[in-house]
Image (cartoon, helix red, strand yellow):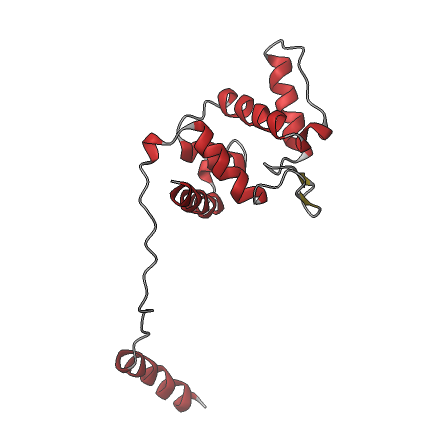
Length: 153
């Protein structure tokens, strides 16, 4: 048995070298985007397309995420906490997640409070929370958003 394993271990690199995996012979050419020139409106539109495919009635039951920006109840609570700290009388309800304009307002309050400046910071922290920049999963999310931004332009 050991001889078979050793023989197999020696053969695999030889076979892999002889028959390399070929890359597909097609290329997807997306227009390049300059991240520093992305407006907030363009970013929000891209996020809405990535999150809900531009559907104000989108709902993901396993996460409880609702509306165009797929806002969870915990985000509404966080935004309301931010507003209380800022001595604002304004508060949002869970129903406000279904309203596109109110969802965008919550997005802006969140980004301003956490001092998110660049489109990447905003997108990754919107997806992964205040520490979203530290999460590997939000890099993949940012790539989706960049693709969406490229197709919008």
